[in-house]
Length: 616
Image 1 (cartoon, one colour):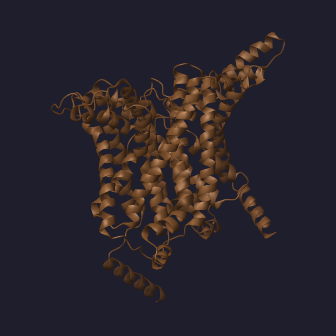
Image 2: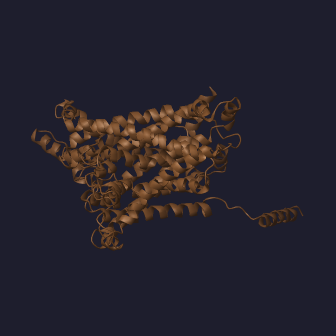
Image 3: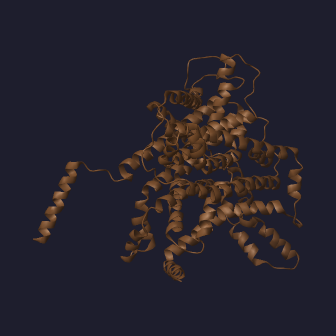
């Protein structure tokens, strides 16, 4: 009874706040139009034909041997990459948390965890080709091997494993730190060996987290477009097959049906990861460790593990270092010549480099603050407010995490190229109705107002790219905001309401300042994800807009690796500089700085003097 009365009171307060109601309506419209609608259009295109409901499109694509092969290839790559990334990530996390290692090794781990964040997702494919391809430095110059091929299944697996294992490492490191050391020490006191403790205590506690890391990596792997496109060769995956179906065969309906198949796979994995494994992980692990962990100092353990992880880390760093080095070689792979900056000059003089960097930077800079603000607003509504559509807002905002970029791109093509609900064709329907003796004034009037259809004007423009950037980065910022807001007591905001502030003023002056660290982190994350995006926008870019990642992909496909490396090097510098600026901003402005002891003493004396004066 009390719960129902409290919920009714919350709803009454909400309906009395027009700003909050308007915000909720705008959010629902945005999420429906730009997340649910494109996915719904894919389903309509796949199941609806001229005669109504039909499975002809699915039957047609299932009869294609290339599509069936692509499904098998995608699942094989996804499972193997997920397993390898989880194993390597667990090794790195275990060594950092449990083993007493040299200080510089920890610094190397931090570098490796940062590199995939600040670089485009296909940089390692370029490095793999330049080192181990037919004209590779290692294979051709050093080992004199001329008939090798790094393209195909193993090339994709190695590149994706090196790209995604830092994600598993960061996830598992946090889980291992949260395991209470007393549980493991109790087993050690009973005579169990370190291996027995790991197998019977640590591993069972970590098992849900391992499953979570595997599924996250699996989803990332099968949704990846750029790496299979560059290093896959003739080894087709679902993402590349969808791209070729719409750009090569011009089969939009077939591409939509293929996208639905890929979406079903990723969505199924996402549901398992989100609603089963995450909940089980939270219930399995303890919270903060009760005391410090006794690190393994046995040299027979520390030396082999430290050397192994150091070599793996140095190899990954070498792979990333090949990108700027490759941009300085006159001709890669044939002979060692004096290094040159001519490729960087040609980036700007011949290949629209200035426009590419300007367009990418401006579009990402526009999308980042919008994404960060929307994420904080959604987080605020989910955590601090009670209303009936709250579950809808949370679920749809997180849904974009499970939608591969290629699928979203196809959905936007099918959903907006002819206007909303294909409204660009309404004039045709109106003409046909007039011929049949019917008059449909509304269709003709709407066509006069929207000649390209409702919202059809955004297709082929920079606006649709900004919307895609926002949608792709929204789940990350929302998760961060929800975690931050759950730590803020409700009474802080209620006191502001009691003093007469409306919801907008409370959010801007109370809530947002308290979560400014999450807001700034979401801002830079959205910027980095937007400026390095490729799979979601490769199908939507037109010649009027140049983007850096599209240029890198184009030159890599042509074999112009030096130009591609020059573009990638400048892009990495931009993204890494953005992360550094964000860290500096948070350090000096994001959090309160500690006062020196003498300043604290002076402040106390000043307060005492003021109090004495008041009392006097």
